[in-house]
Image (cartoon, rainbow, N blue to C red; front, side, top):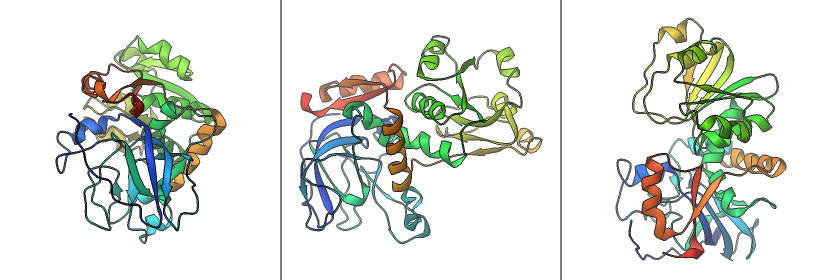
Length: 330
């Protein structure tokens, strides 16, 4: 990545102009600079915390000076069934992504949060909950809602045993959420070094997934498993760990799954996935975070360190999320 100058569009009547203070670094930013990218130059970043500098004439929810957040999408069709239910991430016409998407009004390419400013419709802008550290809160707008949404959808709570596979940018927040929801939380990791860290995050137990004996002991135990791993791996031990009618939700979405279909049939089990979340889930998640004081564990960097951060992120060398402090410059 190199510095590049461009102009933001002028605010429309329902728009909020934001000075960006912090921008989280998501693994999808790396994907977008490689196999996912649609058009270059590309400006990544969809975990934004900033301060309102200007509002459109019809804006109702914000005023200049408010601390706000912007996540993975900034528009949708607004009229399909999912949009009407504030589940805009599942918009039938596909939502407008915060970066590398196409603006629904003027047809220009959206540019993300690795920048000085952002302009977005107030419907997709959120108040920063009072009392949450703004840098540590930034990843809530992607990693946070992406894990919160499926945990809520599959009714995670008291009396449920929940597995979290992978203790990284997504997984560490999933552990915090599931624990705060009242579930019995079991963290699965391939790294013995992460066992103590997972317990500190809130896991009740840690299972080393490379230990066949430990994995065999999990059979028919789990009501729900949230899988954050993005690489292909043998899934049979995790499917065997599900109870009858239970679900494994894959958020990492690897290119291919490696499992025995019979394991689904013999337990009426399911493999599913989930999008990041619409405005309803995001508002609910932020209120939950404010109540339970949940934020990401972050390492704050300057934009001048972004290429090094990408290299470290690809190696898994971050606990657990990088966040760019835009005030520290390039």
